[in-house]
Image (cartoon, rainbow, N blue to C red; front, top):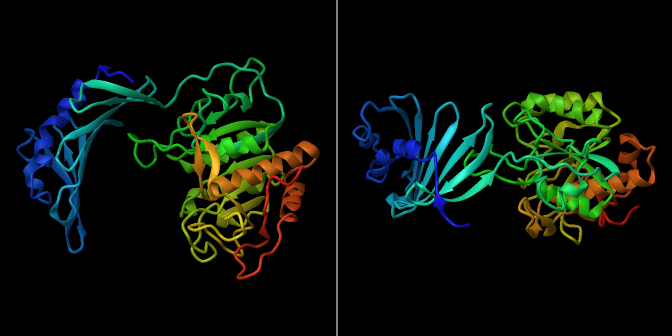
Length: 406
């Protein structure tokens, strides 16, 4: 993309510029180097982490006179500067700067919000903090399209890119052509694929790749996408209820965390909808989740199938979770062909990509047996698993070829 002059970056950039030289000054563990950078600045947090017994990483939070904050993170293992990240925030994150080991600015990013405070895009600038070099959409409009028909399936994830093929051709539509989807993170009807939970400036993308596997192995899938409510996981109850209202009987849920509390609302809602079936990821932490749980996989739901990833020859994939009580089946999920949020083909591995293969199997079964609901689907899927020789790692065994079915 050709670089063009940016607008709106000057003021946030001016707030960051004065601390750049101070951030680059050794000793990096000394917070006093910031005191002279901006008149009236206050140091409200300063945390130093060690690397091999010596300071190696430091986070300093500065409060500016206008009440905005600067988060300064410096990585310097062994005393050698590796990288610096500075982020400006007010009521919401505003602007970030990344610097390399030579203290050169490599990139800057600015978040643009709408009048309701929803993030709309991320503007990317080069080292002068002024020249715009790119833009990442976070909440684009969804064009009207015809409903694809087929078997309705829910997808709770980071969202999907509903603006490009092949995704938009498989998304559920209202009679007027409007997208049927819900963003329980932003509170609108545009569940675009962007997970800003780790950092608002560098969103992760997951749901589009997961959906690409689902629609390739079940072309009759009519997908209803939901962007999960990271800021308030109690809204997962609303997400389940909303999907039920859309006629969804199967839900792909290739995500999870270590906190049971985060998933309590989902747990309660799933139990209130026993005729829905949730295909859930076991996770990729390389651990026995019977002993060290991951949720929602370890919730012991009677209307869920918990899936972990296997190699093509039926061995547990490296890094995939297992558990005789918590994990139902293994399915091949390594180096699976995907299409990412940009529409670019590639390969991906892990439980997240074994899950849509089992969801696709369920969708094809529903297409052949339209009167089935969650209980019939679950029984039918689990009966397809076969036990394996060696230590038992799942409750029912291995589904060697999820494409071998209706």
